[in-house]
Amino acid sequence: MELRGVHCRLTELLAEREMTVTQLSEIVGVSVVNLSVLKNDRAKAIRFSTLVAICHALGCEIGDLLVLR
Image (tube, rainbow, N blue to C red; front, side):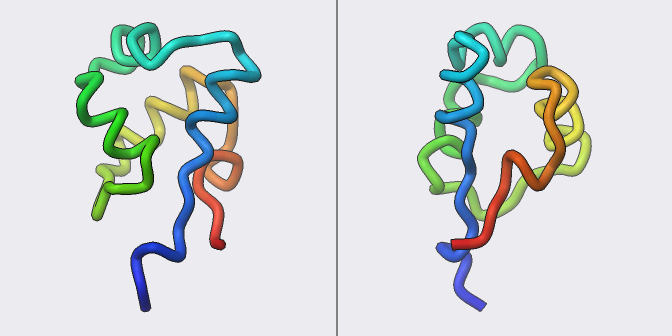
C-alpha cells in the first residue's frame, strides 16, 4: 500500500481554529519541523502519543486529522 494514500488535514484544522503550527508545537511538545513534515504529507510514521496529543489540542478525532485519498 502506498503511503501517499494518507492525507493529513493539519492545515485545514489549524485554519479552522485560527491556530499556527508554532502554537500547536508549544501545546503538543513537538517541534515545528516535525509538525511541518506531517502537515505537508511527508511523514512516513507518527507516534500514537503524538497523534493523540495533536487531536486533544485541536479538539478533533483521528479521522478528522488523517484521511485516505
